[in-house]
Structures are given as C-alpha cells and as structure tokens.
Amino acid sequence: MIWQLDICILTLIVICAFATIMVKDLLSAAIIFGAYSFLMCLLWTEMGSVDVAFTEASVGAGVSTVLFFAAVYQTTRRVGSRKSGRKLSKLVALMATLLTGLVLVIAEADFPGFADPFSPASLHVSPYYITQTLHDTNVPNIVTSVLADYRGYDTMFETAVIFTAGLAVIAILRSYTGVDRRKLPRRYIITEGYPDTIIRFIARQLVPFIQLFALYVVAHGHHSPGGGFQGGVILGASFILLAISYDFNIVKGIMSEKMNVLLGNIGVLVYAGIGFACLLLGANFLDYSILSQILPATDKVMARSHGMLGIETGVAIAVMAIIVSIYLNIVSLGKYDKGL
Image (tube, one colour):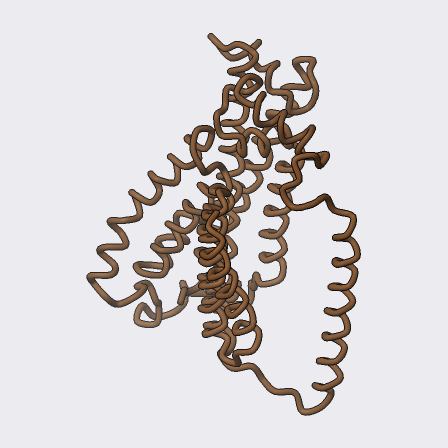
C-alpha cells in the first residue's frame, strides 16, 4: 500500500460522492457515479483486493452505469424542485445520518485494531484459509475457495437474491398493454439501433471476444481473479453492447423474456442441484468432496475444485440472464418493443 496514493484516491472518492448527491442533472450524476465506482476499483486494486476490484469494475463502473443511463433516458435528466417541506426533509435526513454515524462510531470502539495480528480473525479464520486452501480444495485463489466452498451457502443465497431482483424488475416494469407490432406498417417498426456503421461493425466484431473472455473469467476464476459473478456480468454486458450499438431486436430474439427467466432458474438450480447431489451421495449440502464417487479420475480434493467450477457456472448463467432482463425491461419500459 502507498499511503500517498490512498489519500489521493480517497479524496477523489469523497468529492465524487458529494458531487453525485448535489448535482441536479441526473445524467451527470450517473457519469460521476461511474467515476466513483472506477476510483473504488483503483482503491481495491491498490490494497491488493483484486477480485473485489474486478467485481467493482464490471458491476459498478460497467453495467450499473449503463442501467443508470437507460433509466435517465426513459425518465428525465432534471431533478424537480420541491415547493414546500424541503428544509424539513433535509433536517430529517441530516439527523438520520448523524444518528447512524454515531452508532457506527460507538460500535467501532469494540472492533480490534486495524491490522491487529492478535485479532480473532487473524488468529483463527484467516490463517486457516491462507494455509489450508490449496491442501483442502486444490484451488490457489483463496477468494474463490472462500466464496464457493467454505462460504458456499452465503454465495448460493446471493445468487437467489440476484434472481429475485430480476423477477422484481419484471413484475414492476413489464407491460402487456403495448401496441401490437405485428399490426403496424413496416415503416413504423424500429429495428435498427445506433445509426453509425463504424460503431455497429466494431461492436459486433468485439462481442465474440468479450464473450470468450467472460468464459475464461468463469473457468479460470480458481487460479486468477474472476468467477461466476464477474463472468456473468461480462457476458450480460456483451449482449447489452450489441443491443445499444447494433440492434435491440437481435438481442431480444436471442435472449427473450422467457429465455432469461428460464436461464435464471437454471443457474440457481445448477447451484442448488450440486448441493442436493452431495446430499444424495450421503454428505452434507455443498460438500463437494463426495462428488469424487461420481466424477471419474477424481479424488476428494479435486472433487471440491470441480464442484466449485460447477456452481460458478450456475452463478454466471443466472447473473447473465438477469442483467440482460433488467436492461431490456428498463430501456423498453417493459414493452419489449424498442431499445434506446
């Protein structure tokens, strides 16, 4: 860690946070928020948390910013001013912030010192993960082994939360009262996306390479930064790029509403199904070592590695489907008729 660089990045993060709150133009706020996420990515990288930085870059600075842009495009760029009660609302928000800050400061007094080598986490949990991960799972990336094996329950429910969020967006935004496009004259049917030949051509050529990199991130998350969440977001972003720059209807044809919901279910079921397979074989839920009984030429250690690859694949499928579904619903206001 370089403390001078940390101070500079933290200062810019605070400036971006205040600017995001204070600016009246929502599009500008979305851009600044993307810059905020990018600075957080730099901070995590400088602190050595490369997996967290990868997630922040793909989700925070990447897809989330695009979704903000889509929401602003379908609503308004300007924040409407309140005619009355604004001072009272600000006072209530300030009091709530101060109260929350006071609670956090009081709770912080009970925490161990920063980087205290004698804290419970440093004496028990962390040393075990650092020294035993490779022996237990044959996975050199400790972050992947913690998320997908030691803390597999937590990650499974995180995947379920993402799937539930996608269903909530569909339930809120989906509209079935739009115009029947099949009855419209052909000149009224919007099929083309961004009308720029160069951008459309380059984007379409890049999409296969982006998807190939996403598959690499999923499959190689055991040995390098990455995994199901990052790979799924990159896969979803490739379809979003195609929809923005080339053709909304191409993506809708490939990743239809039913297909997205089906893939989201499949992703969650793949994760849970591997856990139930462990139960059927006589072990605990998500105890991948028992899979050595059905996986050829695999011992108990390698079975845990293969089990993690399986659940990471399920996570990637679910995340990709939900990301695409959220984007399609936002840009079309739930009508699936046209994009941005």
